[in-house]
Image (cartoon, rainbow over all chains, first blue to last red; front, side, top):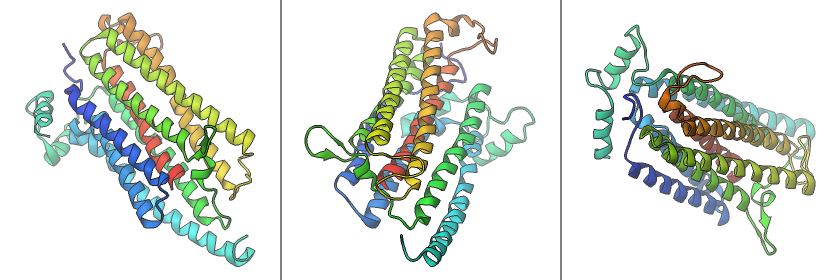
Length: 107
Length: 242
């Protein structure tokens, strides 16, 4: 019999998520194929990305079925990355600005 | 979602508090915080968390150089287009690589499932298919790199298409990811061999750790493999599609 601590779930859940990941990947590829531009392009890319990532983490990596103590220990620390992204985008904007001033607007 | 919820409650032994009170109780119990999780799996999660920060650093530095350059960024859709005799199809190789990785994630998850059912034959075959798909992913990446270096003249310090930081970030990010896939393939083959030999049934001690293994190792291996797929989701979105 299965080990007491193992993650065992009906195959149907996996197959459904598997199919869904294929569909989502196709959608994100089509975003590029049909040359969608601007806010629509970026929001669709992010939407499909987060959906795919979410399904992989929740079902394939079993986070959905783990105890909350483990889920929080894994999912909360990466939130600080948002601060990092914020700091670095301010930095990048500043660098872009100074490059514009010192090297002339665009090379 | 109702049926899976019932399986979840069945999977956990009773007597443990759920939700936030459960978090406090688990962490304050002065024994083990991560209940119902074998130590190897908890350690794999800690490793993957640290790996998350490494890949995030790469992707954030990529964001920084792409935002701060005054030279136009090469258009990935055109750079990674591939022609099969006719019109070039945008990003086609990358799309195939994405589907291969997702397929391998599916076979991995099935391998974990059959592992817990102690189905040695199916687990071994599924692990080997996963390894094979992983190896073909690395092969396609090698092809992609060769095409970019030899035909397009992309270098870490410059390229003919635009901003010179393109090559540096591309080789760093996809190279580090490809390295993860390669290591994964090696470990998949090792685990497949152990499953086939029946090491996890007999409790044979490992050559390196001299600890007894069991089928939980297949799940821990699966976590690593899904993480590699997960990272690719982000690389695909931010580097190839953006």
